[in-house]
Structure formats: structure tokens, C-alpha cells
Length: 293
Image 1 (cartoon, rainbow, N blue to C red):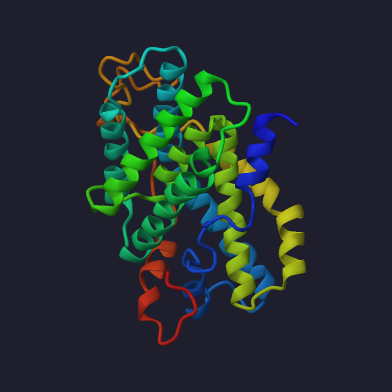
Image 2 (image 1 turned 90 degrees about the vertical axis):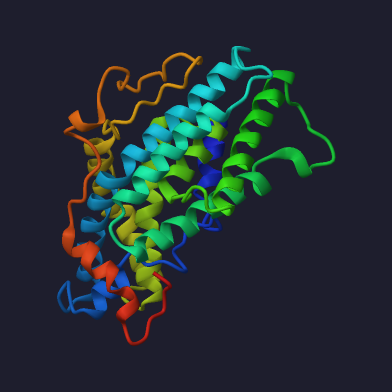
């Protein structure tokens, strides 16, 4: 089994802190407000299609640009160009992306859930994906040890910024950090992020007693795949428009933003489902609720 396949198995584990037990992504409010018709299964499918489409268009550009920054750091470190050099420039670029996503997140309920899930991913990396707590490091070349140490330092520093409330630590940003630090390819990172969003929606539907676990698996196998592939294909090349180049490190491979300006970006992140935003914002107004967001 190759390294990337093994990483995909780890990251798709249902024990990951993806937030489906604390966040419904607006689905609870959607059902409580009477949207989606009378059939629970169709209601779940309708919401899932709209939510995946809106989330991919708003978040995938941030996942991609953050991943590119971290991937470039790995590349520079593998080439020996960053030995004993500070990583503050990379942190600053990630911070810019995080602040932009925070500004584009329109309601406090979604913002709160995204930040909660984001810092959980950073904690997952520092406590679960680094070998620092093992008694010995087995079968790791010296170059890999140095690169992994650099990635661990990047995650630890950014997590401390999140804890100090200097940066928001939103989910798409932290997912880009996590998968970039682990060396997962951008294509796999994008697809898996949207897949986990779809799976979280179905988990929320089960908890709301809209569908059963077997029905959820049927939807995930026979319906979700085409939706996920279509939305990832539509949004995989979106960019935030921010300059991703870190001074003194060369260009970020494949960013396409070296000579572009933020105000000139047309095909960038956007909100495409205003109704979903309104319903998500009304989550805290429900008389009783199962989810925190």
C-alpha cells in the first residue's frame, strides 16, 4: 500500500473530529423551519446537494491556497533551502487566508463551528500524527525527520496563535495545513474535504432521526459520489486571489497568483446559497436544539 492511500484511510476514519456530532451545518435549522418537503430522505438529499455546492464554492479555494503554502514549505525544506530558516513568512500568509475566510463567513453560528473544528484538526496533527510521543522513531530517513519536525513546528506555532485568538483557525485553513503537513496531494485533499463534509451532513441527519444508518450508507455510496465529484471538479481551480509567495522562498508552485490582484479575481470564493446562510444564522433562535451549530 502506498503512503497516500494509507493517509486517506487514516483521514477518513469516523473518529476524526469532523464535527458531525456538534455541528449540523445548518441542517437542524433547515428541518425545524419546515424546508425540504415532507419526505425525510428527500429532505436530506435536497439539503446535502445545496450544502455541498455552497460549501465547495466558498471553502475549497481556501483549502487549496493553504495547502499550496504548506506544500511549498515542505518542498523548500526537502531541498535544504530552509534549513535553520524561520517559517514566520509562511505563517503570515496562512494568517491572511484565515482572516479573509473569517471576513467572508457571514454568520456567527457557522463561524463558531468552523473555528471549533479547525483547532481540533491542529490538535489531531500535533497529538495523533507526529511521532514525538513514541519511544523511538522507526525507519525514518534523516531528511524525513527534519521535514516532519518543520511541519510539527508550523502546526504548533499556528495552533498557539489560534489559542491566543490572534488568528481564527477556520476549518478549511486548518484542513489545508493538516493535509499539506502530512504530504497528501492537493487533489486528494480537496476531494476528501468535501467527502467528509457530505458524510458529516448524513451523520447529522441520522442524529436528527431523519434517516437511518443504512439509508445513509446507500446515499453515500450511490448518490453522494456524483455530487462530490461534480462540485470538486467545478471548484478545484478556484483561488482566493491573495498573493501566496513568501519573500525569499520563491514562488508557490501552481498558485497562479504571482501577478494577479485580489480585486481582479472573478472566479473566486463566493456564497451561492443565501437561504442556507439565513437558516444557519437562525440556529440559536430555535426553542430546543440538538446541535451547537
